[in-house]
Length: 109
Image (cartoon, rainbow, N blue to C red):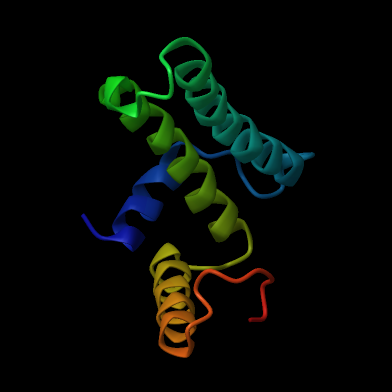
């Protein structure tokens, strides 16, 4: 499955663009799902001595899927094909690596 196909399929379960507050719902959903992953990581640090090999990868797969869904629908809200978002990100990171600034800080490095 490619990124645009995923996005197309994800949109079958998304609210219409004109639904009141849909953008806020998408943004908060993305942050919330990302927070769920961070919370589970925190518990591994706290309760399992930072042994990430004990992470339930099936659960992680579900949570990452939820993040991906929100990302795909949010991108569509602004007319951005997910494939374009992914390609742009890889190009940006390759450029940073080539220039030796992959580990720096700031968006425009």
